Image (tube, rainbow, N blue to C red):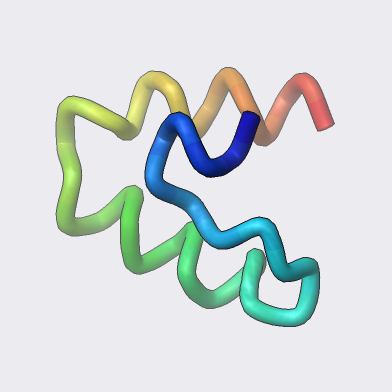
Length: 39
């Protein structure tokens, strides 16, 4: 599921990479929030 959004599946890199991806990808910010709330 994480791979579909382009996020790393490694829990050790989730935190940092998720924040970076959300910052660079404004369109993915909505998905980022959805995933964050779901988890």
